[in-house]
Image (cartoon, helix red, strand yellow):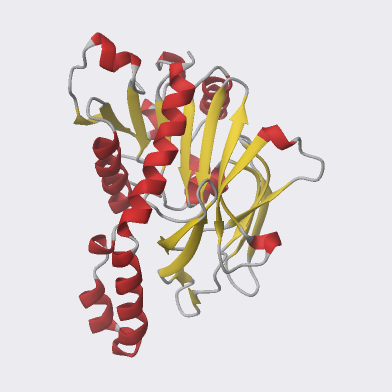
Length: 283
């Protein structure tokens, strides 16, 4: 277990916050996990919570039965098909029980795929992942990638920006996208099983759901296709342009859009954290 931050709270502060945040890091070498994603999520959590103990966990250290029900468990970006080899079936069951009993989960990009009932992911023209997932916090499919942006020679997604509309106030801004998907609820799912927090502003209705809050028993899972944890400053634009000068105009536009949308990005993430805190305060 790697502790990223530890600050002792007062009794009042303990009552006002999620007691701990645990970020999944795959293995000690971050197998199947974006290291930058873990660091960026840590930084944002620290900015939202003055007093919060944050730890990154490898798959063997994930022990939900020991966590306070106000805790937050984070599945960051990465390659979730690798996680299948890391998690034991008993651990997946315990994660489900943790959330059902009142815990909180945040799933970003790969984490959103991993936490949906069905994942459908187009790897290439001839290769598609289409399978059911055991956590199934979202009652439906996470389908991706939303943007057809794979590099044919490597099958690696190219980062792009996507316009997001936050539903509570209809504000809009650009956020990083890197292979994330959209959500399609199962037919007949009760309206109170999930809430749409954000939509892709330029996509048709059937492909528009970008962020969902799922009610899972007494707990909450928030799943996001886009990467709200990435600031424009986290992206090595100069290096990307040096590797592929033909992309300079596109990357320049992307940098400007993300920079101008930075306040929007932060406000969206803070609203997600407020929803977790509301759930925790009910315990």
